[in-house]
Length: 70
Image 1 (cartoon, rainbow, N blue to C red):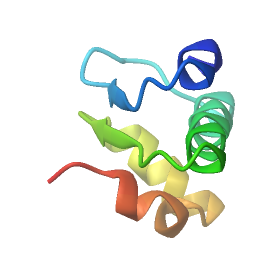
Image 2: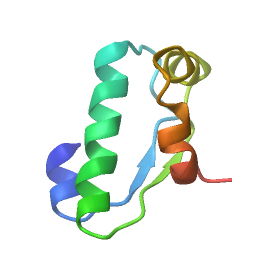
Image 3: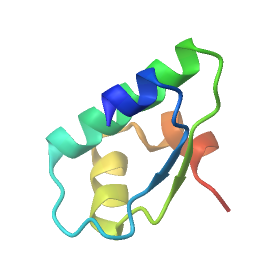
């Protein structure tokens, strides 16, 4: 995922992700940071409920809010 971000891929569909943990959230944050550093706005779709719950628990959901596709 981070290599894709370095290449400028700004779309991420997580709808097929079934297992998440704190590492998943950390990698997602890193992907967002790489894109934002390149001036690219990330677009995230299909975020699993468990991942959103972890984001709220860790206090990072607001950092990613602008990245979620409506």
